Length: 255
Ligand SMILES: C[S@@+](CC[C@H](N)C(=O)[O-])C[C@H]1O[C@@H](n2cnc3c(N)ncnc32)[C@H](O)[C@@H]1O
Image (cartoon, rainbow, N blue to C red; front, top):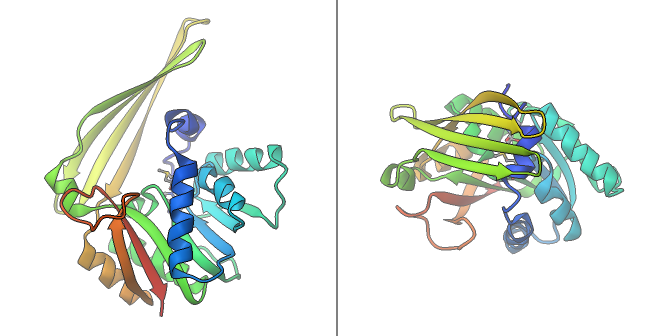
């Protein structure tokens, strides 16, 4: 899997305004609402570790995995800088469809559309089964997703985001294409980096294929993987999900 290899280097810059602290508080409250005394958390698709450090502040211990080696290297260097022990957080470069950690956790989380990178039913079911194997009895699985009814109501659009630094400018253009029969939105990210000092330019492209999901298929795939879907709400607002909920949060329990 090659996505996020080059992008990882700029990931934290593009999401420097994302409120990871608030999101981590929200996720901590969701976990605590459905699971008594959670401690050991498996974080799927942790990226550069931004939720991990805030969840650690809430007293949780994390084992966090991502398929991007670059993202894991960044997460590990932050961990080293913050002098965090291996008992508190461990990062591994692994694919969430086939993890085998030989440990069981209270809860697994997958935040910021990680699950949407699993494009086929097989990918989703491999991941869900692998998560199930890593949970204790009654363990929780909490993840967010692009929510199908809202995505089709308010289609993804072309966007441009620019980051200006002292000597650099980074422009990211997002160009979406929808594949309705696969439930896939393919986003072509075109990056252009200009270095004012050396007067040089560099560009690269990454294609992210995101599968938007619908309630009945999530419920069915979870059931087939040994989970009961116990709760769904709009991301961060807690409202019931519907046509306006682009981002939805799902909570499943191991049965
Ligand atoms: C949008 S990022 C979210 C990262 C992090 N959770 C956050 O909130 O900043 C999606 C992440 O999912 C990871 N990912 C996608 N497919 C994966 C897979 N099959 N196995 C492990 N990680 C995966 C990507 O490498 C990327 O870091």
